[in-house]
Amino acid sequence: MADLLVIEFDTEAKAEEVRQRLLALQKEYLIELGDAVIAVKCAEGQIKLNQLFQPVKAGALSGAVWGTLIGLLFLMPLAGAAVGAATGALSGRLSDVGINDAFMKEAAAALQSGKAGLFLLIRKMTTDKILNELRGSGGIVLRSSFDETKEEALQAALADVQARHAATSPAAT
Picture 1 (cartoon, helix red, strand yellow):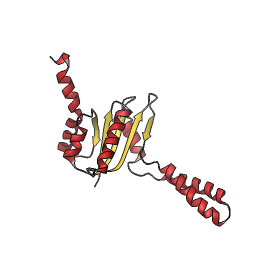
Picture 2 (cartoon, helix red, strand yellow):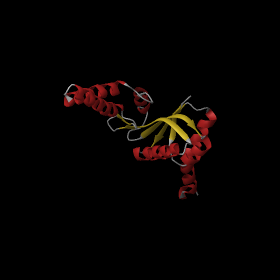
Picture 3 (cartoon, one colour):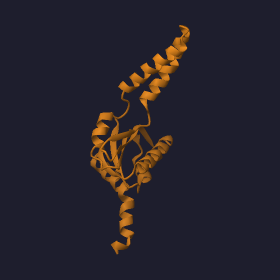
Picture 4 (tube, rainbow, N blue to C red):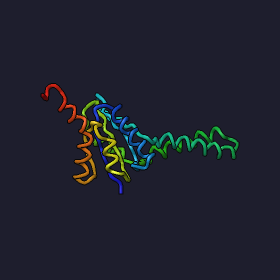
């Protein structure tokens, strides 16, 4: 069973940094991600999704290759490529892989303008090692399907750097 996690960051760059760190940990088999999407709320209120897997592009490319091959059979490779690309793009547009786009846009509407949300679909993870890696990232957990203790541990790890910074600032003394 997979878990869903939504973390808010101050900038898109910070969310991308954490996503890249998690993708590196996936190569070390410490976490298995089903999807990792960054949603950014623009000043106009629009939600922009930055997905790892682009089903429209992948479908168009795959359709163009297959269309060309089939078109070669009928001596019309260009027409076959065009029809294949259009069909592949349409099928990619209609398919939704990973986290539901409508859900992400609805959840990202709660973000403040200019902030980014990192949506993670986690299939498996080594919790203690992931928490150590995320320690001090500075995000805020918006939604999760974790149990309360796991969610509190994650929030504490993310906020660790903020607490240390507040304790060492001149205003705290």
